Image 1 (cartoon, rainbow, N blue to C red):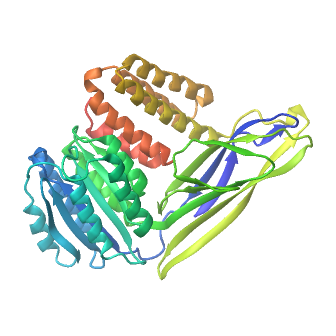
Image 2: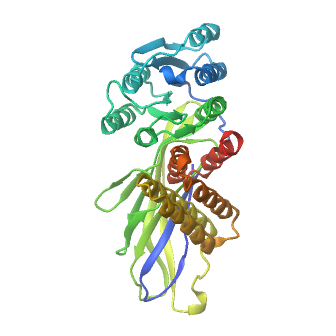
Image 3: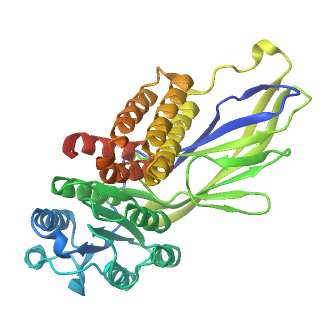
Length: 431
């Protein structure tokens, strides 16, 4: 992993206090030069009555396509849930694929939605074979509300957090159709270190499964943590992104999950910088990176630290007046993401005109930041499109799920996932 950092304004005038945005950019190598780690994968599928028909048909095919891409060193288990929880096959190496295909074909729709029971069983199957030299994942897919077993969101989030923190079992959630609770699934993914996907229709299922599996097959770094230690009375004002953070006496730790080959991750924070009397460079902080590198012969713990320096000048002509493009771009993405969450909050209160206006205001702000940047131009276009949709109250249930998915990926500083999500929406989504 390579780490770099930038300020929006790095050359500041002396004797003036102010705020500055600070970006930490992480870049994984483009391709792994080693044999990948084996997977310990648990698939947990809702087969309640609402999954009947094309939903379940496409899900079965997607699972079989996923199995096809696994090798004999990979381990897989499959759990289904409705009113009851059933293990279709216990954890096993992927050697006899036809037997697995046949088992998948026998999945039939059932009754209610015991999400917690199915998920807990899936976690237990993965936990039974936790090894240091493997990748441990659960894919949890549902199209409905949890109405059996544990239904309280806080309790469900605790299940995911415990599995992640104690055993590094990551859960990715996939919400199918219009009937699921996106707040719950996004929260579960958030605390479990995974992704949250909105699968609007059956045509998307196989594509999302391929995307998620493709990332797992290219994993190059795990347990990524960035630590910022501020000096010189510099204060952290806030984090623009939404990575989990722990604040210690003199430092802030940001937990940034795992990274696959070629992936970039951005952390954006706002710093309050006091006035400086003397011109010249000033070390205001240091930023450290820690992660576990995945290597052919195992893993290696890696660390690196960089000084964070601002330059002060008493010459007005030397003061930086044009912000750094990469920082402005990430700032625009996060402003748009916050506006989408604000729009959700307003529309939930049936204040649809105000929700629309919040998106329009964000588009104006992005235009003022940099209307010529292609990424921000795309954000502006999408904000306008979403503003037009959110005012159509009859479509809000669907649009809310799209907005929630965008907020999730933007908060993780993952522009690539954001773009892939939008491409699926263009390809398969409703108008």
